[in-house]
Image 1 (cartoon, helix red, strand yellow):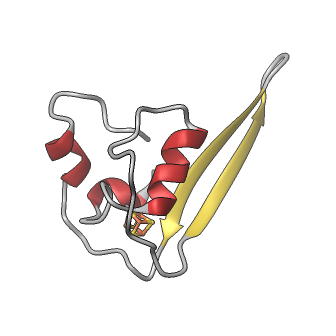
Image 2 (tube, rainbow, N blue to C red):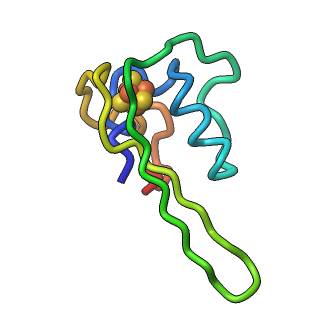
Length: 82
Ligand code: SF4
């Protein structure tokens, strides 16, 4: 799971914005203005029949600042992206 969903910067962060775009998810913001310090992204590649699924997860980041449930607070009632 992406650590960003519990990070204070999730709705401003350029890297999380790129991850949302890769997952074809609606963006929390159209204008991210926070550039994180050394995010590490884990890319899982899953070939299924005709398509290759790619899953991007931020697994480490020097800028990570814990705010538990930040994503859920912004999108109450929605399923937290995994
Ligand atoms: S953990 Fe890093 S990449 Fe993820 S939202 Fe926070 S600052 Fe951005």
